[in-house]
Image (cartoon, rainbow, N blue to C red; front, side):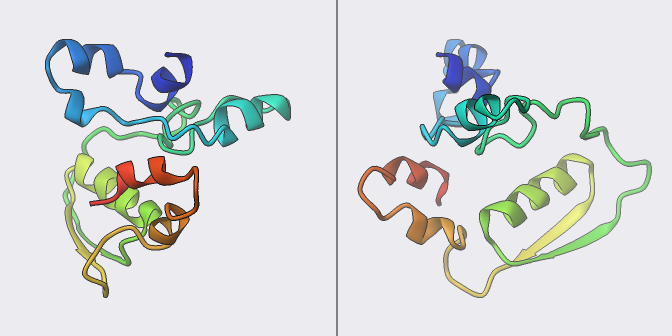
Length: 121
């Protein structure tokens, strides 16, 4: 549960409330939690950019909503879209392919990487 809670600190609450489909799932990559900690850096999480950075990001609503255009539907740009929307901006996401995910799609193909597909639509 330790790594799972790094990926989604609200995991227990979401499960108790029957919202298991909203849980951000740990993909067992060991990059941010074990890898960064082993280097003497703070703990991070590849699937939850807020982990270890809670004091760095301000997601409080913006005073004035803006029109935001995000071009490209890779994982990072999808996260930027979500963050801008959480701040109250009107966001348009444009992706040339028929599917969001970018390079995350081929990254989920190798044996042992199927857990990556939990982030794909």
